[in-house]
Each structure stands twice: as structure tokens, then as C-alpha cells.
Length: 280
Image (cartoon, rainbow, N blue to C red; front, side, top):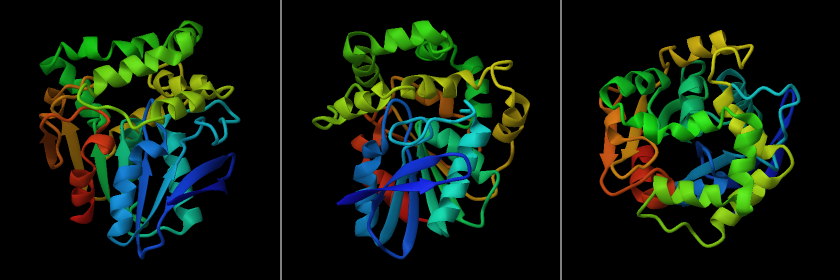
């Protein structure tokens, strides 16, 4: 069983799903388009191994608050998580990030090791290796075409929300072709994004990556290239229809590719992910 709690931070509040009350700590960060419930199978396995697990709705994802200053860049997203670790008094934390959660986890690892013992990054390589990977895998440009769409503020929001968010169904089917999502899960994801302002917030994560669209772009670029201060392990899926496995070939951290698993691996391979977490 899990419970939802609301944690006030400096400028906004995050809603956090909590599992367990064990002596060890883990924090699970969801990506797009998902919610903390997409990490539940991993959380349940960690709780069985003696963990307390927290999984926040990232800023902008209802019921967490929208950013009062409109910021959804990596610098401020990682600051949210570092503050949340402090508010929860988590220590020696295994920080697990999927998709955007992985990007945030990499940034956290470059800033704090007092509360973070290791990072387990799922489905997304570090930004420097992701950028370099296009040279070796030019077909990734097609796979990443949705990122270009998301730069078109009003058109993208209309396209994603059209016909009761059928775009979300299509992404999940393409990105994890061997997965049947749990009953009701995609309905909950759509309900989250349908909350006023949440879809624009979620797409703004992608817009903040582009020079000129974020006033803090240079600071974010430096943070994305900063060296980690704690161990990092990376897991990718051979059947990922979002980011090809070849994009992970030159990552400077231990990396495992899981056969037949797609992008939403926390639902597809929770046993393997939990086992990696428990090795720390």
C-alpha cells in the first residue's frame, strides 16, 4: 500500500507517493508521459527488501504545483529533488530516475552525495552522450522527432490532447511495443496531464533544453556536463522505441541492456531494476 503526502518546498509543493517504512531509502523519479504509479512495481520490491520509498509527482505534474516562475529546466528540477530529500530526511538514498527522471537524477548526482549514495538511470543516457550518439545513430533523429513537435507551444498541446489524448496511447505503444500497461494506468496519466497547466508544464521540460528558450540555459548546460559525485549505473531496453540501444554504447558508467524490454521498463522489468538497486 502507498500513501500520498504533500511536501512544501521553497517556492512550490510536491505531492509524493510513499511506500514502506524500512531503514533504507530510495527515491523514484518518473518521466514523460507518466506518473509515480509507473514506478510502483519497483517500489513494492524495494519495500519488501526493507526500504522506505518516495516517488514525487515532478513539478507541473498534477497534483504537484505548477512552477510559479514558469521554470522547468534541469537546474530547478534537480533542486526540487535535493530539497525533497532534505525535507524527508532521506540519507544514503538510492535515486532511481526514468526518462526525465533519469536526466534529473544525473543532475542531482553532480551536486549532492550527502543524501544520495548512488543513481540508477533508466532508459535515457546522460545528455552529453545522448547528443554525441546522434553521430553514430542518425536514425535517432526520427525517433526523437516528438521533441521537435513539443517546441511548437500551442500546436503541440493541441496535438497531444486531441481525441482524449490518443497521442499518449500511441507513444506508449511505440516506445514499449511488448508492454500492455496496467488497467487504468494510461487513464491516470491522461488525467494528470489534463489538469489545467500540467500538459504545458510537462512539454516545457523539453523547451527548456533549447538555447534561448530558457534564461538559465548556460547554467543548465554546465550542470548537464558536470561530473557525478556518486556511482551511477544505467539500464536500457533493447526494444525501446524512444531511444535506441545504440545511443548507450559509449556511456562512461556501467550499462546493461535488457532484451525485449522497451522504454517503460519499470513496468516491464521491475525485478531486474530492483536487483540492481539492491546491489548498492
